[in-house]
Length: 156
Length: 120
Image 1 (cartoon, one colour):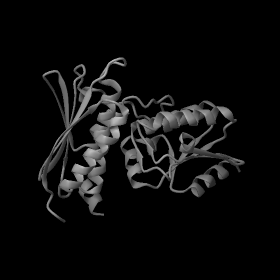
Image 2 (cartoon, chains in turn green, cyan):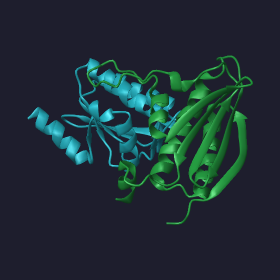
Image 3 (spheres, each protein chain N blue to C red):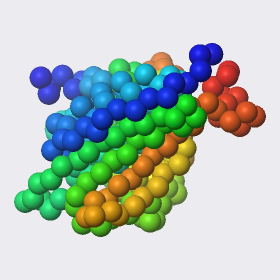
Image 4 (cartoon, chains in turn green, brown):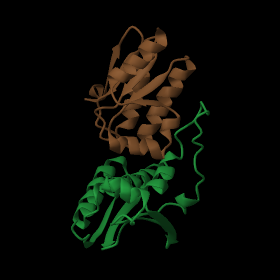
């Protein structure tokens, strides 16, 4: 297996609109390809990023307002990190409670699923508020931890 | 053409709702949900197989569509099952604990057999 590469990319700043989601997907996919993250974890990280980006597009700015979404990428040879920044009101998605996923709830609603998925898909997530910006960083190890369930699954 | 996002076949014991859109994401999901609601209100809809074999990507808005469809049909005491054999999509179902909520079959034949046996 080739060594995962160190790789970073300039940030991508876009209007926080649904149409921008495809460009975020392309930016993240291209950079994950360049740093050699393998299929299973690449899928998880891509989906986690998309869920957070979709959340920013839908909720970061008031319905009448508008603003930007910025995506950044860095890989240090051990971990790939994608950061997502918005200039909306302070909001830490990691403090949001998990949705109730109990099967017996016949009125189970999809609300909150996106953040829940992102948290569970990513290797780790961190949030900070800095100068009027919400910055969420999503990380994934480039190599599976030896002996972990995920590494066995990927080796299968 | 948004009409090509879904296709519906009716059978004696069940119907098959085939999702033709390759992705159920923030961009396509609102249209797909609208089309599904149109189909469900136009006919007296029986038990339903949602066939996801063309799907290559699903996010939480797509999961929301599946949940909304199941809830709509459940109100009429009809069952909804899924057909999916994509490891990528199944992995998302697993994380969202969708397997607690839906029966998932690998093929439409298996899902059809399930409804045929339920009726007989």
